[in-house]
Image 1: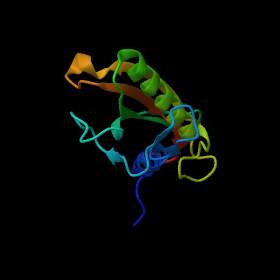
Image 2: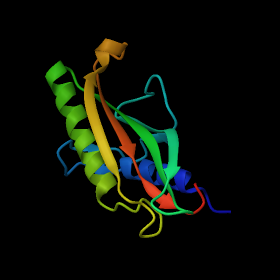
Image 3: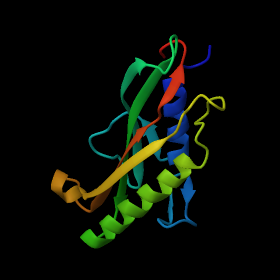
Length: 151
């Protein structure tokens, strides 16, 4: 049985977060370091979690068409000894992940299903949240699409 569009997008994003970015700006290999769901404390660094936030629906441009916007969040945890290094690592890894997410905007679905993938991100020092020596990249992803079924 095939998965829903939302789960397919979620799983595809997790796989893309698990990229080998050693030749990119972050220099970090995230292979095998991402999970689905939200975690409070990363079990190790670097580490990532990919989480579904919500799904909104509106009527589409014509009768029988719906416009949907699922939202997702990605937390990226990286270690570094100083605040400037943590910020640099979190920003660079977030940038690498966004580049990997947007490289193919279909996200595992048929061409024409996804309207686009939009990413917004920030980086914070984990010390503020009790994660000493950890930089945190946060990416919010929206993937608007249309369908005749409303899902």
